[in-house]
Length: 101
Image 1 (cartoon, rainbow, N blue to C red):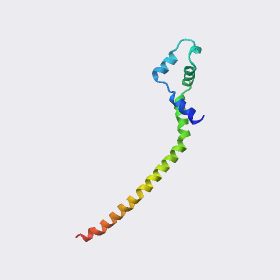
Image 2: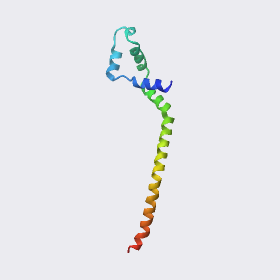
Image 3: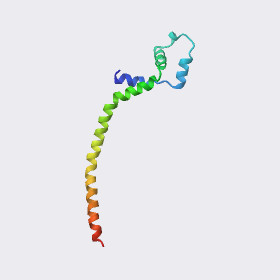
């Protein structure tokens, strides 16, 4: 399944009330709309929507890792000058403390 299909399935999760209505329907199943029939079949699969979420997570995992790496790299580059300044300030203060006595 492609990413768009998995996202669409993940958005189709019915509420508990909707789920109860679908399974509580006593009429002819063929009278239900195609969406209702589809959701009813999907709900008959154990942990169907949890599986869809897991598949969606696996599909987007690499992109998320790349995004996080880029974000951390950007932070690292941004923080470097401050780290150097802090190091020099601490270094100078440790040298000046003995001189103040």
